[in-house]
Amino acid sequence: MQKRTFKKTGEKISLLGMGVMRLPETADGLIDEDLSVDMIRRAIEGGINYMDCAYTYHGGASEKVLGKALKNGYREKVFIADKIPAWLAKNEEDIEKMFEESLARLDVDFIDMYLIHNITAPIWKKVQKLNVIPFLEQKQREGKIRHLGFSFHDSLSLFREVVDFRSWDFCQIQLNYMDADIQAGVAGLRYAASKGLSVIIMEPLKGGRLTDAVPSSIKKIWDRAETKISPAEWCFRWVADFPQVTTILSGMSTMDQLEENLAIIENCLPESLTKNELSLIEEAAGKYRELIKYQCTDCKYCMPCPFKVDIPRCLSLYNEWFLYDKNPKTLMEYKSWMDKRQRASNCTDCKECESKCPQQLHITEAMKKIKQEFGE
Ligand code: SF4
Ligand code: SF4
Image 1 (cartoon, rainbow, N blue to C red):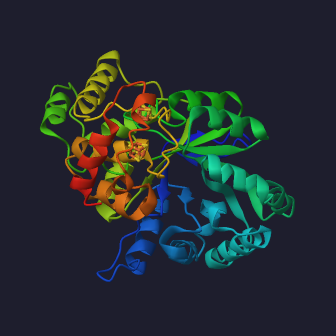
Image 2 (image 1 turned 90 degrees about the vertical axis):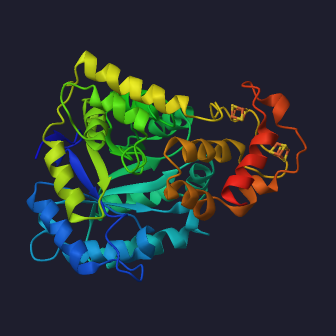
């Protein structure tokens, strides 16, 4: 297994990290514990030493299963990463309660890599209001947290602000060849690395959307490559090409996926893609973009909508729907992750947003189409 260096301590971390958000499930929707334990141990035997978990995954069951899998000498072989969901806290006591709960579920005395989960503008405000950082720094002094970081899903400008706020050890950002300029993106990766942070990458396959159902026009592009590799390998190789990347997370649900990823990662060297390969990836990204229905740049000038519709997010999910061959994960994100009040069905056709859109998008027409397509 290839390893990269954790900047703060010089420790070696596997280039492939295992996300335990998508552990295999039984027919009744619970985590398949036996298979998950086998997968986690096989991952460790295959050289993975970074296990990425969160308080919220599977309502806490992921932490318990990870803790179970790390018994019998496995715990000492890995870095456990876990995350605190500040958005769930009503007060400072809730923060402490969730932290202690995570330690108890994992059945460990300390967590190696602890992250403030999913920083966005409102969550960042809450983190400060509830004094989350001083609390976590205290836990670090007590030896219950080794390294402190954050995971991020907002604009590049907020990302820079958070990076500069204190001396973090690491951060976690979303990155894949379709999202090079979205959220923190490649610019954020370079910025964080220049400030001494190790950078963990999530969503290298865009949640499976770049690999689950590849449109035929994209397949034709990959077929032209000199070296024939899978769409997943193109994704991993693109991310790993950046030497600033420390670890790439993949949420694996089957033993086959794990074995495939273990094999792929061996081919993922820094700065190894040729000019031709990079231009092929760019061509594939360009083709994906052509399939996009609304060229929304996520500038948010149209916001806030007086009726609370999250216009850019609705447009982004509608685009994804066609881009990735109507992948059910997109629909799930719209129906399960988005607040009901933010969905397109709340649009009253007031047209207040349209005059503000620099792309001159017909937002009201789009909202009608989204409602029709997604059913609400
Ligand atoms: S037209 Fe619809 S989306 Fe635009 S501001 Fe009015 S309610 Fe919001
Ligand atoms: S103003 Fe237009 S381009 Fe900008 S986020 Fe809104 S819809 Fe998208």
